[in-house]
Length: 141
Image (tube, rainbow, N blue to C red; front, side, top):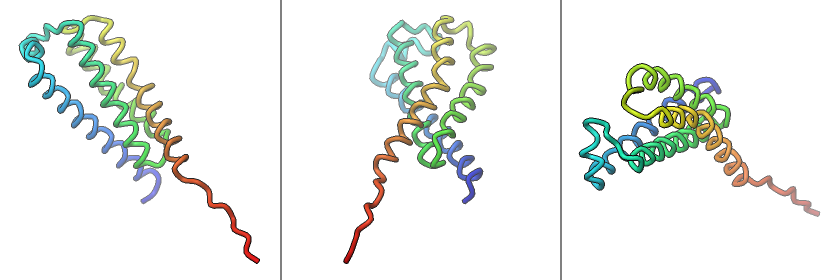
């Protein structure tokens, strides 16, 4: 598979991983945090709930950046994924849900998408490079 196709497939996989983790995190919050489930229909979240939502989003973004980097075999793909997440999220936050959350929430969420995805990809790339150790040439007589 060529580099462009591999990167495209890795970006799709990163997006899918992010959706799966987000859905799992939100479902767990509803199940294990009754106050969260009660607040969700009206988005009357407490500070702790907002922070939990941001944490799930950060986890999704980091995991997606790692998966994208592994599949693309290139850490730059994770930065691109963060840009895609920002491009998708920005109009949603500005035009659909701005009034539902405090301004600081949007700023934090939108502000961490690119750096978390990119830095997670960079960390994954460095980790994978450590795992591949160069073979020492053997001198046989």
